[in-house]
Length: 344
Image (cartoon, rainbow, N blue to C red; front, top):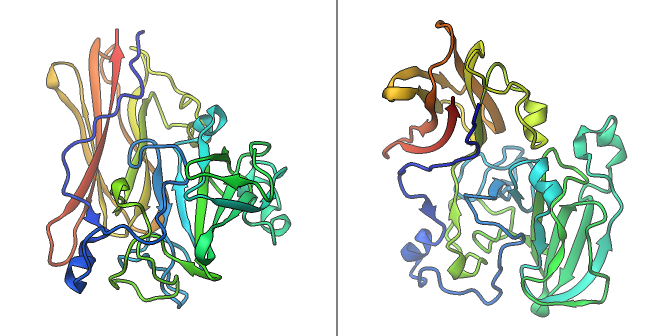
């Protein structure tokens, strides 16, 4: 059997909300370059090879909210989490980069990349939630912190001058982490700021501000992200998938089922997740949907169809997963991800 894997086609979707949109209402030039401009803290393509998993919590109450009043944060979260697809990508190495030029203030390395998956981790990680990390001081009272780096990957030392974009280490899963990502925290004169608005983290949501991102990045607010998907011949092994390994049930012509799975960042209660599998000759084999009953930072879902014939016909099988979100007073927002597999 010949298999064509990891082919992603993103369908057309409504534009994401630009973070500088609110500046037009306040009279500030849209997307003007801030006095302190940040580049991405890792080497990746946003929305393709990295995704925002959590934004800064801007709500001072126990109810977490991101800067757009959405639920994509958790209580007290003081930075932005940029996630990569899985631990296989982490093992291959994704550089963590200095978001601005400065001098290294402090470094910690040597913590294992087991994160919160290790037994008793919540107790042993107290006071070391950042895991392996780097703190950089910048001119004008600015400071950035990079957390959860891969064990043994940090190549800078305290006192060392670093340029914008200089490699600090690699994305890992050390410290208070459940998946590979880098946590970027930004401070000015000791005050934590949200890089998407330039405002203190305890500010109320929905306030206009000046983003700290370099305008050439075109950083936008992601309501959710369908960041990984694939086929399997039965219920997929989520631990293998998150480790960057095959799902554990390779597809064969005599496979008992054809299953389409997806991982999503930022689902909200009421979201609709629609699954569709199209077989050879454009025959629709599966058209099902599931309503999300709980707001979660990360959700794994799968649906499939049992084999009824002697074997699956040879040819191309295309799977599409679409997330649909209804919003009061606006059109529905949606995003899709596709996968293709060949059976011979």
